[in-house]
Amino acid sequence: MEAVPQDAGMSATERPTLPACVINCVAYGRDGGRRDVALAEISDVLAVDDGSFVWIGLYEPGEDVLEILQEEFQLHDLAVEDAHSAHQRPKLETYGDSLFIAVNTAQEVDGRILYGETHAFLGARYLVTVRHGASLSYAHARARVERDPALQAQGPAFALYAVLDTIVDNYLPIVDAFKETLVTLEKDIFTDTFHRGIVMRLYDLKRELTYMRVAVTPMQDVLSQLVRISSRLVADELRPYFRDVLDHSVRINGTIDVLRDMLGTALSVNQSLVTLAQGEVVKRLAGWAALLAAPTLVASWYGMNFVAMPELESRYAYPVLIALVATVVAGLYRYLKKVRWL
Image (cartoon, rainbow, N blue to C red; front, side):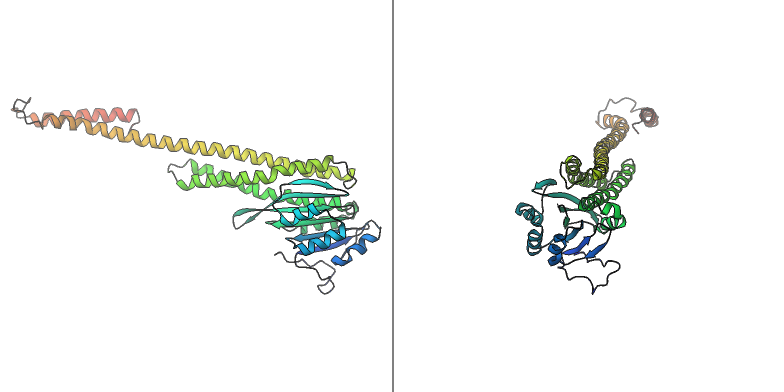
């Protein structure tokens, strides 16, 4: 479980008591101010129409916490059920005056790529982000919102943009790592020695790229809907920001497709090189077999125990025969060398 970060300017004793699954519960004012609030105080904050909004960050919350938030923000039953159960496909749903968004996240843990989900409830004066599984903290996104009071004044939609931008940016180092791994494997493919481990690593990389594509591709549909949606929750001034995140997502997805194509080519090249190497071995074996065939043939003739064999009575029969066999073998050896069978 992720630890609750301590905010600057407020000691641990001044922070409201929150359940362990609540990472942050902050009210942001239109003037750029912020203050931590308890879950029970949310309705009091929303009762004052001063342009402020509440951003609550949760990590794998229980039903009791979601029920409190459902009551505070009047969230739809189906959206709350999806946020609790997780395992949702990336999507954007409209429930009355609120939006429910589900997207996939990715994180590298101990050399493995793990996937999680983030669900977001967007209202006129609130944003609730719910993380499940492998997901990095959104502390950077929160700091970005707090750093720019002018954009913070745009309301919770800008906070949603910061979260989605952080999710997409977290894909980049993973894709870059895939690139480096593929370059290394391409070098290993062209070594003279075949390694079974190379094929296994190529397959593992292709599998990870496929999983990554499944996670990234649906993000484009969600972002496209946010860019085009006719809702007062997303102001026209913020649409270029969502469009920028969409462009990043499209670029990452394109890179993944290119890597998958290159990986498929690498697998084909590796198989072709293995086949060529096996062919070379067979050629060499056939060449040496041909060299052995010549003396074996002559020796088999003279091993038939016939009386009337040529040159049996000659004094120089064996030396001449040995010289003849050596000449044939030498000529055959030179020919096989010339045609690169040896």
